[in-house]
Length: 226
Image (cartoon, rainbow, N blue to C red; front, side):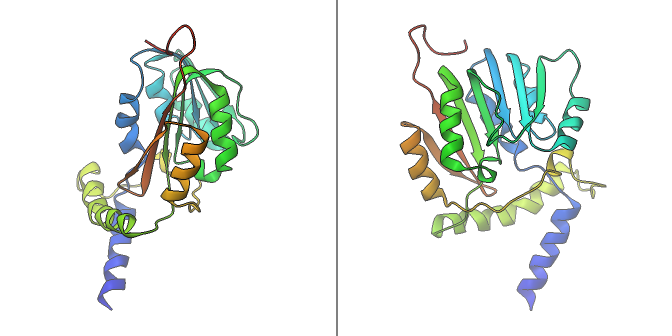
């Protein structure tokens, strides 16, 4: 059975050469934000990689995650002088109150009640603020199949490059968070998001991801950030 053997070989290779699919989208995410802004909230911050990137531009950043162990790791990995605070909380119930100029949420939204969470993000975003989501969707249809096959082919190549051709002794800390298979398809996500966030821009992406970008209507003093 050549196909199962090939898939097993790919799985073993990928396990030996892990790389963070979410971190691949951090540069894109940062390009959607102002050069400087006031406050930011990263929902599902994990080991704090994105929080530390946001802190280079923000006056204050708060990272929230339900996993106390990974939040402890995030605190250890963040310089004491950085304008960062971490909170252990369930984002569906204990999201710190805003308003925030920037809210980010990477590979976490499918763990949370979709409509309720986006509605909360909308309420906590300052006028003119920016919401950026990198999410996971359940594969459905020909487009997802093509993107999935492309990702399967590229995944080992990028893993080999990022690990410089050597097996990794352990996966990055950012990959130790719990995982969950998404239930909503991209089409379902798009319909619900555009209803809740008029003008939201969504796009399918490689490596089993999609992106959502929404800017809140500006207040009388203009957009958030500079």
